[in-house]
Length: 312
Image (cartoon, rainbow, N blue to C red; front, side, top):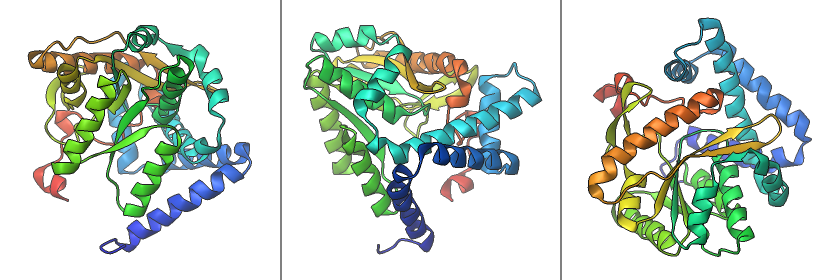
């Protein structure tokens, strides 16, 4: 733990305790506790809550201030549900989960047909609903169709290292191949892993509504300038895989996924238009269930931090 601050060590210990305890406690009790925590956060406010409110106001500019208050509360409840499920998901029955999701997965048929034909598929997703559950559904679909190709996804490196390893182990336990978004040799290895997966007719899932690397494409998102990552579109142009926008959502007692039509990316010249098409699709999908969009960070150009803030 060299170089880790006491706050990082504490965070690592808290996550470890949550993974150990949440799955062993009565599910209704834990659900109420997470919901109560979300409601407390909504009342207290803070930077993250203020950012969520501003982001949701851009997605739903038609709502009143009172309606926006309820939307923010519901958004925090949705985010709390995601974390509750993160700590419980490894102990859940994937077959039962798949069956519960089936009625709520819309538009996926075209991409499944592509996979049956032996062509890889890239799903580009926003930070919405429970994308881990959506990944479990895709893995189960591949198994059901008798396709051994599997699924690869990318994670950001976290601190402390113990927490990062725990998140990697968690997602690997769900049946995902995990690669890390890094520069240099590690980044090239991750890129090779994704291209291999697509060449074998498998699936790559990439979160695509926030440009963390600063190398994305300028787009119009909900009628305002923003920047989205170009990775999914560039990977599609390189490999010939089918690129589909998708959005994970919650239902009252299950989960759903909205999958859009394939976005054509025949060559590198088509990358920028494809990223704009992803932004358009995300805007429409998120507007259907805005409370499930867990974006507590700035993504629009007007909200970009100053250089001094970015350095901090």
